[in-house]
Amino acid sequence: ESKVEFDLDLRGKYSHEVKDSLEKFIHNSKLNGLKEVSIIHGKGSGKLREEVKKQLKGNSSVKAFRLGNWNEGDTGVTVVEL
Image (cartoon, rainbow, N blue to C red; front, side):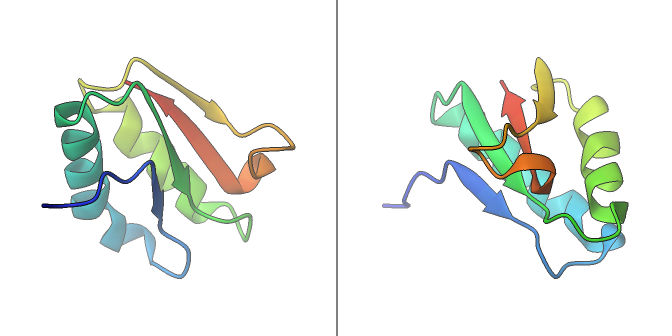
């Protein structure tokens, strides 16, 4: 039995490495009936955040997404609505 994850931590990954884990995470979240999940990409240079944004835009399961509020991890987190 696998544990349902509400967030995916991509910190420390390179932009080209995130596509598969992001797609798998969104897919599994949807299968598990989740309505909202968080992608943790850290603040850094913003490259990872841009890549996450690009991947989310191309994913049909994603209804909307936004950067986290100050209490959710701020610009280091993208909150995704499924």
